[in-house]
Image 1 (cartoon, rainbow, N blue to C red):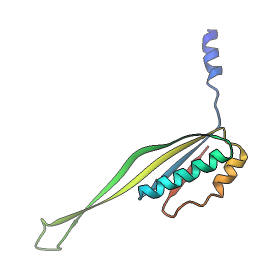
Image 2 (image 1 turned 120 degrees about the horizontal axis):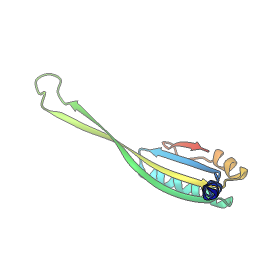
Image 3 (image 1 turned 90 degrees about the vertical axis):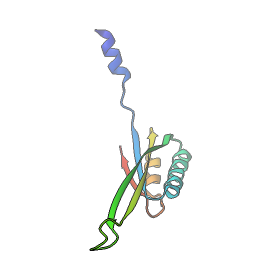
Image 4 (image 1 turned 30 degrees about the horizontal axis):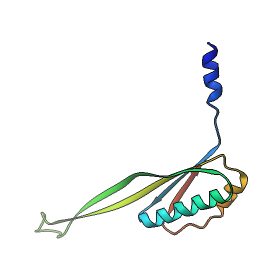
Length: 113
């Protein structure tokens, strides 16, 4: 029975920030991820990532003509690129720096503790 207690003690919950980035352009999201990692490393926290998540693809099919040519169709797609960054043992300076960071337009950022 004491072995179970040791296993529970070893599984300490360490504080971390999980940052998820989403964008339509992969170059913009990579630049933003690099900017976040540089900021975190400057303030002395550990970083895991950026981890590329699966690209979400939304496809739309539209009729080219409205009446006679029903078989003529066009297909469009939107690609949503995603990245995840984990910040281990963040201090207050890291959090403040991330909150005041200016990222490129078109990048959606979500921060969870």
